[in-house]
Amino acid sequence: MEAGDADAQLMLRYAAGDARAFDLLYASHKSALWRFIRRTVGNAAATDDVFQECWSRVIEHRAGYQPAARFATWLYRIAHNCCMDHWRKSGRRARRESADDDAVAAAADDETLGPLPAALAGEARERLAAALTELPEEQRAAFLLYVEAGLSLAEIGEITGVNPETAKSRLRYAVARLKRTLAMDAGSD
Picture: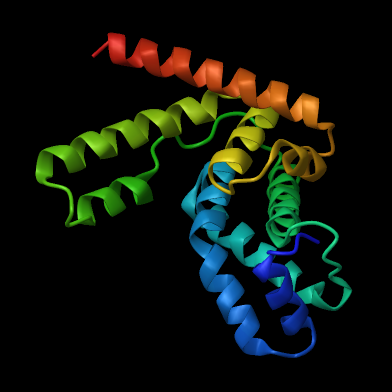
């Protein structure tokens, strides 16, 4: 365990019966985890189900938690597995919703943005969300784990079951493909 992993300490406290520690972990990770699941799964109803399943597994496996890696690595491995379970159960792996309506609504509600910047930010989010759906599953997972969760290549590899070099390649291909797609979209405006 990394010396500065306060989340791992919170999880150990939660495993020992400190319910407040869970509240702190949940508050710290809920937004980024929900966004990761939303962008991986694609639709709001399924996202909520997978999000709840993920936290249920955290609760279920609290007694066996061992801080061998950062807490975030453990949490996002659970989230990744929940997303993959969702796709296996639903039998769908192809196209997902392209518009991230929740992100657009959040941008519209952001009082720090004026109407034009809010609209442009919402449009950019929509284009990125659409481009993400075009990525192969493995590249999308690597990209989202890196961007949304802030995980290292080694952690991404551990979560997805590949070596860090493969995770690096997937991330590199994802970024290149997103740049191409977004550049083509910008050229067609």
